[in-house]
Length: 441
Ligand SMILES: [Zn+2]
Image (cartoon, rainbow, N blue to C red):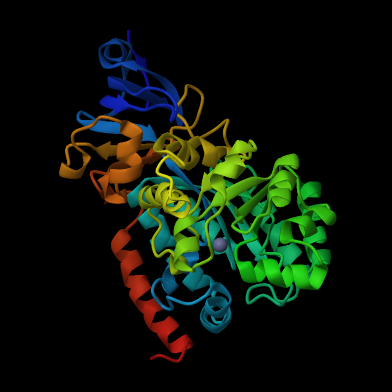
């Protein structure tokens, strides 16, 4: 008598854990959204039956990728303004356009990014933006997993207006999404250069009362470092330590401009870091000292940042840049090798989001967040080292099937979770609106 499960993924090359060996011709059994079992295909064929089976012959089966820093609703600004320094790009292009955004725009732009993530193998992401309720609705609809938070600023927000209304908005989000199997809420003050210290302190206090993670942009550019030093007489990291902001519940994005002392501080407080190589390269921000952070035992994940500063959300190409940026910056081909990068994009990202007991690797009892890549492709053969192939050769479109919480979101490159053509129609409408918002119509 066979045990009935929901889904069997059969005969694939199974990479269950980014640091362990992959097994050819293995099958994975999924029930109630979690991994129930895996092993050699012939053994599992005797044990399990399922109404849905996916044949993964000549395919790689692996945990979905984790994008630890993004602003998915910025997809509507992809290519709107490029080739500018961060502060100019923000103040002259992005903030003016964002001052005219609205819930509808945020929802459909988020759906566009959800389609892009499903198509390129990202199953979990961390997002900070305006009208984050709409991002949550899109994430729920698309079937992805996420840690989400409304951006907190020291100036009035297009969404909630003054800051006390901001905390009300976050409280409402916490209430609305409590107990959701895939959506969790964080407290996300934007950055030390957009939030005064008192507000950062308030955000940290609020997060700790609510027992929620804190997410912030930190030490992204040389300008930020210089401005904070001029105003406060210390580095951005030292400032956050001084006001009691830092702790193991903090995820800091970018962390490019760090002194040795800053890195020691981050390590001492157990702060987790999101490395955003493509955004840092494109905005000319610099190279984050990732090997030095890892050497201090700091948990590092990888993030794409928003599509307006990347300009895509493909975590495979992000892994490629993550490794190569370190090598070219140091003139050292041994810096940040492929196995470390693959770990950062899976289990490292899961740890960065505090979700390592649920995602980041495939183990019995963990979530069935699974991607399947076709390996019979010219650029993926022959296969000597799987981690090298995934970091240096694979691309998002190599993902054939995407599964989150046991639900098939994409099968044979067709998105099943929602109607993608409707998303494109809505984005064409929003494109016209954005052009008119910025006076380019
Ligand atoms: Zn960002």
